Length: 518
Image (cartoon, rainbow, N blue to C red; front, side, top):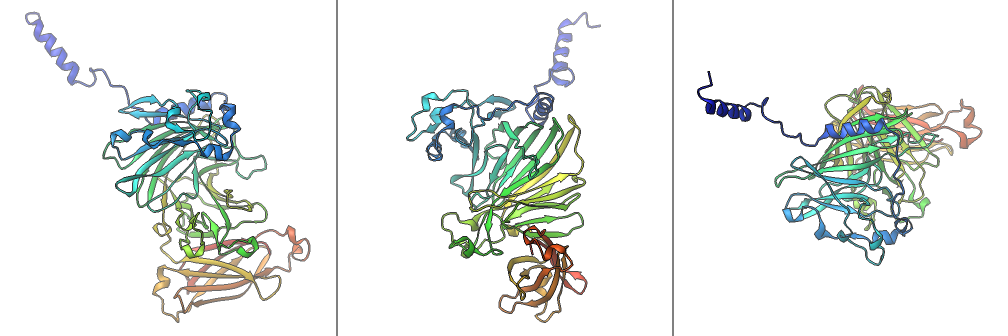
């Protein structure tokens, strides 16, 4: 049929080639989460290779001041000349940061490895720049965006050290950190610290409000693929998608870990610390929202010995370390400015996480340079090596009032000596929710539960006539029935407590929970 018009046949064939997707050559797929997941799966099937310490000896031996003297040159910021809403700066390896990472840029789907550049750093008084290998890799990176002024790009997100990252929102200063994963935290066998070994950062468009980062996680027993979509602003939101693979079994797999610092607070006696400041902490409490819509508030402590708590938290709806106290007068610190530290709230996305527990680890610490608070969620059932374990969640770096129970909340927790020498007095103040609408003479009660080892005495609830808030006062003394109440006081276990304000039988507040050694 087409023999008389061979040119027409050729023309039709060419048109079909370009118009029919099944005939035309497919474009290479853009780099994405599936690529990182494949890398993580393959990595889990291979022996673990530890690159810790693989930096030049001169960088391992420098002092902290020497490392701080190495400064990134702002004019070398990636994308500065492109006038984009985001810029990248990088950290130099050295001292504690002896594990380098590979950093790639994804531009229009194409991946390009970012080479290490000594000219991007001012080495100050250091003289070893010519000893740095060009293929060394960076220690980490930070991202800048206009969160406080439209005319200036502030640093708002940092990835530096193992799988740690931290962020701030408008008007905030860095405080607590998040992690990609926690492994066997507070276990007698010792904690394993996974690390991000490679990043892929997607170049944003000129009108983009978010920036996307992919990361490959590795450790002796676990690998993982991560996607972070960060949106800075009045609250900075990071959407996380992750897929984990086990090389070997682990005992405790900590999902969405947070790490913070608490030395002393309103529930402590600062005079015992010989410190002029009333409080010193990056976070002052653990907050959680459970499947049954119960909200809990657990004030943090700096215990004398390691304290580990686990709350049953199947299909948890939210968890976080909060800095509820945002009044300068309660810190008096002009340098650290703890009143400007962010609260961090984590919410599972898309699907429930299943059966699991929320953990709080509190480590004794004499000074504020140490992070001594850790919290994370653990699944009750772990996959077999090679099987995938996906988790998606949202991290909100925000002011504490951005996330709160619809009911009344705990304003403060104060402790002291009770009427008896061996008793403890607790004074709790509540505000918010339906409490604010009650008349001054409303008859409120409190549901106070004391666990094994203690007993309740002298419970009272009344209105604070000066502030309009509601106060719960009670005392707890050792249970005489406990043999340890009379002997071996140092061996007494912590006594758990819970309290909620009631109007009749109706709870009006979140659940306050605490532990004390009587």
